[in-house]
Length: 249
Ligand SMILES: Cc1cc2nc3c(=O)[nH]c(=O)nc-3n(C[C@H](O)[C@H](O)[C@H](O)COP(=O)(O)O)c2cc1C
Image (cartoon, rainbow, N blue to C red):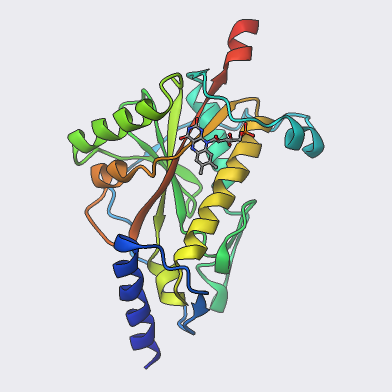
């Protein structure tokens, strides 16, 4: 009975996601977490990115809160620096055990501690880089649909033409969220806001320019993964070296 309820809720969510956002209060289904099948990335390979030398600046939280601004003119920062920001935002500090298995604790808040949001880095590197928060590593993946991939980059550039750094796309795997909550849409989008804000603060503390984009980045999902209603594109941000740093150097 419980499983049927959770399934019904999931299909309702899928229907609504294609039309309008379901803003009904979320309700736990009572289902328990399943061990999920990993996402079907194309030709995944562990990427070696040396980020151990990076660290957050000595800026106080008070200073970061007051100085952070969206910066739209930016140039390419070293991959290690951008990867550092993504990892600091999304890395898992604690993994749940037993009945909490599948739940995580991170710098960023997340409904039900499910953390469904992943970050994908796109820059001049030959392949997109996905941050794997289970293995605390980056995975380079092959593009499945080159046309969608190019369209994604064009769409980003159209929004912020002066951003010449990396794009970080936020994508969610909502399978567990849908199993555990009826009317889960608003949880997902509030999680996405929390990720964007946390990443903005970390980028600021790391001395990098950061700008969220209004587009969702649907094309990137189509470019990288087989179609699946449980996968949702949640937004894109630009990260790079700020104009002020370029003038100083
Ligand atoms: C969800 C979201 C979408 C945004 N989309 C864009 C965008 O498409 N283009 C842009 O230049 N700035 C975008 N921004 C940045 C806002 O314009 C910016 O946060 C706002 O003007 C406040 O400025 P500040 O971030 O410098 O404090 C976005 C911000 C958020 C949170």
